[in-house]
Amino acid sequence: MNTSMTMIWLFVGCALVTLLPRIIPFIFVRSVRMPDVVLKWLSYIPICILSALVIESMITETNDQIAMDWSTVIALVPTLVVAVWTKSLSATVIVGVVCMAVLRLFF
Image (cartoon, rainbow, N blue to C red):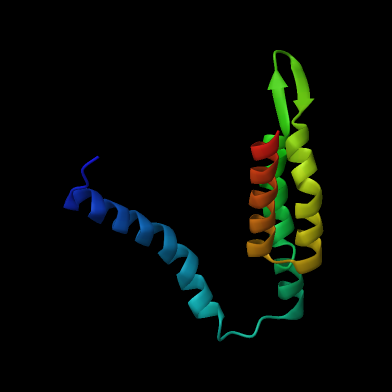
C-alpha cells in the first residue's frame, strides 16, 4: 500500500482532533484546586467507564434470548479489582485489554 502525503496529513489531523480535547482540559485543571467532593466524585469515573464498556459486550442477544459472553465476565474480575484498588483509568484499561487478549489468544 502506498502512503501519500494526503494520507499522512489525514492521520496527523485525526491524531490532533483525538488528542487535543483530551489534553487541553488537563492543562487547565492542573493548576486549579478542586473541592474534596469533586475529587471523590471523579475517583469513580474509571469504574463507570469500565461498566459502560464492559456491560455492552458482556451481554449478547441471540434470537430472542439474552446470553452472557463468559470470556468477558472472566476478564471483568481482575479488571474490576484493579479499577477499585487503583482508581486509575489507565491501569484499568490496560489490565482489561491484556485480560481479553490473553483469553482470546488461548480460548
